Length: 71
Image 1 (cartoon, rainbow, N blue to C red):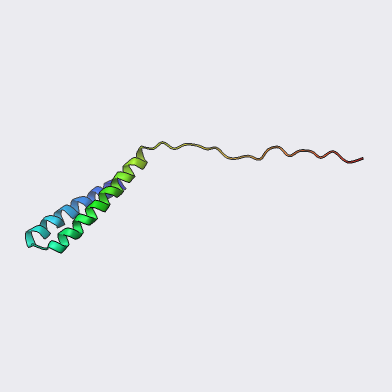
Image 2 (image 1 turned 30 degrees about the vertical axis):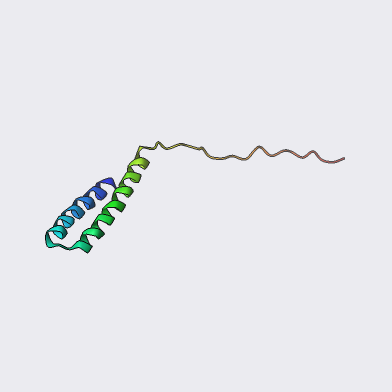
């Protein structure tokens, strides 16, 4: 996932350069917003990748109590 996000960022930066060169202000603003979201997503993915997995085990039921026959 991180590789793909980096690839998308590279493409967006190239598109932003073109938008600046062409004077497409609205396009530049949209790309900047998308870059902000992408970088937030990548930071979140990097944080999750650093977390270790915690095994909680499989829950078990307590042993059933035997009922004594009534006399």
